[in-house]
Every structure is written in C-alpha cells, then in structure tokens.
Amino acid sequence: MRRFLVTIFCCMSLFACGQANAEPVRSLAKVTKLTNKQIVSLAAQGFDIAKRGVNFAEIVLDQAQIKDFVMKGHPVKVIIEDLDVYIKKAKASQTKNVAYFTYVTMEKQFKAWVEEYPEICVLESIGKSCEDRDIWALKISDNPKKNEPEPAALLMGAHHSREWPSVEVPMATAKKLLTEYAQNEEVKKLVDNREIWIVPMVNPDGVTYSMEKSKYWRKNRRNNGNGSYGVDPNRNYSYEWGNVGASSSPSSDTYHGTGPFSEPETLAIKKFAEREKFQASISFHTYSELILYPFGYGYNIPNPDSKIFVKMAGDMARFNKYTPQNSAELYPAMGDCDDFLYGDLKMLSFTFELCSTFIPPASQISEFNELNVPAALYLIDKAGTYGLVTPSGSDELINSLGFDGSIRAIVDNVDLFAGEGNIPMRNEVLKQLEKISQRAALLVCEDLRKGNSESWQRIKNTAQATLALSFIRNRVLFESAHEKNLYREDLVEEIKNS
Ligand code: 0X9
Ligand code: CA
Ligand code: ZN
Image (cartoon, rainbow, N blue to C red; front, side, top):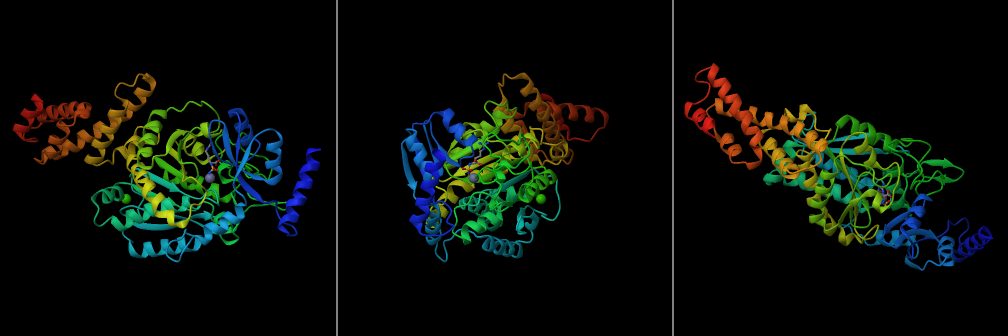
C-alpha cells in the first residue's frame, strides 16, 4: 500500500514538472516531533540530515517522503522547496567579482599564487578523482620544496559537492598566509614554523557537477551501475567503516561504497595524510554552525585526547561563535574522515559545519570567511603545541623545535594538564613534556655557552617551565664542574641560586 502511494505520488510530481525522466524533486524540510532515537534511525537509514535539534531534523526529502512523515504524525515545514532551484539561485547570486570558487577558478588561483609566492608555496596533485580531475593540494611553508621536521596541519574542503562555502574558508586561509607573509609577524611565524597543506576540493567532480548542472548533489560521481551515481566520501574512510549512519544502497545519499577507500578521492587523502603525518586538521562542510570532534561512529567512544579536543574546539568556537560538540551527538555515522585521521593516524581532526544553510548568497562569502579563518589559523598554530603531546608528536618534531616553539608547547600543555586527575593521561602527556623541556634546556644551554642569556631570562620567568629549569640547572652545574670557562661565571652563580 505504501509503495503504491509512493508510486502515485512520484508520478504526480513527475507530471507537475512536465519533464520526462525527471528525478523526483527534492526539498529541504524541517521535520518535528522526532525523538533522538528516531533522528539517529533516520541517519542510519541513509537520510541526508543537514541539521538537527533535540526534537527536530532538517532533512533532504522527496515529496513522497514528506508525505510519509506527515502521515506518521510528524509536522513538516518545507524550508527549500526545490533544491535544484536553490542551487540555481545560489549560482545567480554571484557577480563577476563576488563568486564561489569553481574547480577551474581554484586551479587558476593556485597557479597564480605559486607564480607570485614561489618562496613559500608549492602545488601538488595528490591524486585523481573518478572523472580524472587532479585533487590539488597547496603546501604553504618556508622552504616549501623541502620536507622539514615542522608540525603540520591540513585544511580540507568539499568532501560534499553542494557545500560550496567549504572551499572558500581553506582558500581564504591560504590567501591570508600568502599575501600577509611579508608584513604580518604572526603570519610569518606560522608559515616559517609549520607545514600547512590546503586541499579545498577533495571531491572536484561533485562540486563541478553541482555547479555546472545546477544540481543539488552530495556525493562524488562514481558510476555505480544501474543508473545510480555517487559514493559519499565522508562514509568511505576505513576506521570503523560500516552501515551505522551510512547506507549500503548505492542510490542513497550516504552510500558508503563497496568497501573502505573504494573511492580515488578518499584513497588520495589517506595516502597523503599517511605521508605527511599531520598533527591537526579541519574538514570543512556546511551547514549548522558546529565544531565537531571524534569519535563519530558511535556514542561514548573513549577518546584518549578528549581533553585537547574539547579545549581546542572551545577555543575555536570563540572565533566563530559555533557550537563545539562530539561528532556522534549530531548523529553517529561510520566511515567519516575524522575518525580515520584521528583513529588511525592520531591527528587532532575537526569538522566544521559552516553557515546556517548549504550555500549562502555569494555576498556572504567574506562574512563567513572572516569568522572562520582565525579559527583555522589557531588550529595551524596549536598543531605545534597540543599536537606534540599526542602520539602524532614525534621525537623528530620535538628535537627540531626552536626555543620559542618549545616554550609555547610547554606553556599550553602545562596550563591544560596541570591538575589533571587521570593518571595514565597525565603520564602520557608528561612523557612528551619531558622531551620538550629537554629540548628547551638544550637550546638555552647552547645560548648560555655563547654568553647569550636572553633565552635563560625568558625561561626563568616562565612559570610553567619549572621542569625545563631543573634540566638547565643540572646541565649547567654538571658541565661547568667538568670544564671551566664553558659558561660565564656570573651566570653559573645565578643559575645555581635560581
Ligand atoms: O554527515 C556528514 O558527513 C557531515 N554532515 S553534512 O551535513 N555536511 O553531511 C557530518 C559528519 C560528522 N561525523 C559524524 N557524525 N560521524
Ligand atoms: Ca618549512
Ligand atoms: Zn558535508
């Protein structure tokens, strides 16, 4: 009976738009009087849920599905009548000078940047999409052609085709770093001391399809056969890949693919992330004004770095006024990008759900960029402080720290973990903090031997650096006892009494 009704309804909407072969019109609708259990079950059934609250969800639905909800007693308010028309309007909102990046204009911009700033950026294709487009990655760093032992951060956009703002924020961050390097002290510090990688279009085929064909589209453009297209890239990663909040039906919007990394786009990100060993990342999406952190594949999955995730998400939320929360609280979904990057590669991986609609008018691009670029800069910075006390903080990175970098890592982590009652967690962090403090001590002693006491003065006045201080004291006393004139006597005296 239900199938019969659905069939009739589909035929009606087919007549309504007067097109042969038309796909059912899809709307964005707010469905209310839902329990959390029902919302989670909808996600599990493969519905594309754009936003949720305690008892409602904004869902992509065709007319038959809307009717179905109404019949079951759930009030439905249509927010966007026809999502294809919505995409057309978003396109029409653009002017020559104020427009969303397309694959082509993004490529052009990259090539212009590489031309203009060859000293601080390089462009690399990290793989090809289903339709053979390059997946572009821009690296921003000093000595960009060299792989240097500097903390690394990754910004990604457009796992999902229809989420055009997610391309803009990584591009705007790149623009700020490149164009302000010469005059902005803070920007220069980030570029010189980090390896920053920008991949604004993980799914270039999908973005291009949605833009050129004015199609509401979420997935990539994999031909699944039988007339069905697309795998959801954000359900195709390997960590706990499966069918909670993901669908095994190829026509579903949250189709997880035939297996983990069945898609060239996600496989490219995997290989790239394994190679670069990032400390932190943001994957941008729209919409809901959220900052999400792992794990997302199920409820209450223990996360050994939750303290850092909560701190960073909270700090970033101060810039954009978004809501920080655990991913699964939105809805559990298996195979997303962050669970893989954190679960397998131990990166501090975040998802931003930008804006309050999929594609705001182009006139709002600068507004959401201004809100979110500072958060992205924060992440890039903290990749080198919080990132170093997680398992992704290698000895090589720590032993390459400069004095300033080591002090900042010490201060941030001592501030966060002082008074931590969880002993295993505390020990884990302490182990890394000890190495960082050894590094700081080594650098101070090097300076002291040259008669330069600036770094000593600074570390002496840093309340969080007591561990490093004791390392310095031990080293100076030991070394000066064995070899005279290695250190200035007055400094040895001062250190003795400190
Ligand atoms: O469902 C997604 O892939 C993301 N939302 S979107 O509306 N842009 O599609 C959120 C993913 C968050 N991760 C989990 N809940 N596991
Ligand atoms: Ca560098
Ligand atoms: Zn998305």
